Length: 139
Image (cartoon, rainbow, N blue to C red; front, side):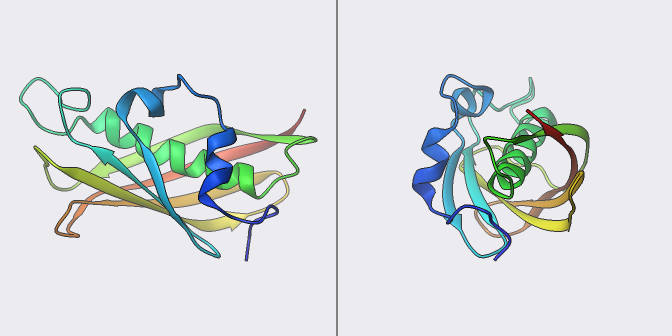
């Protein structure tokens, strides 16, 4: 297990409300020994003007997952994770329903964390692949 804190879905309730993820309807649904999964609705809040899932919304889902994953690997009283780079390849469009993102570690070091995030549609077809790098800073 990579987490410094015992993983549970309840721990995500300690993160601030009224955030971008809350606005978009992101909901954490599963935490394993080395992964976290969340879902996000594809609707008027996450559409671009042509009615497709906005690439920026996919990036918000990816960064939310990676940021929470980094935070769970830290002593949150002494350290914090700050996203310093994100990239995303949008592979398939989605117009309705939900997308599901899963984050897994590439590297969890003392100063840098790198996360891989895969986002799939309800048919489990790959929609987006993303990589997030977080710098670890002392509070």
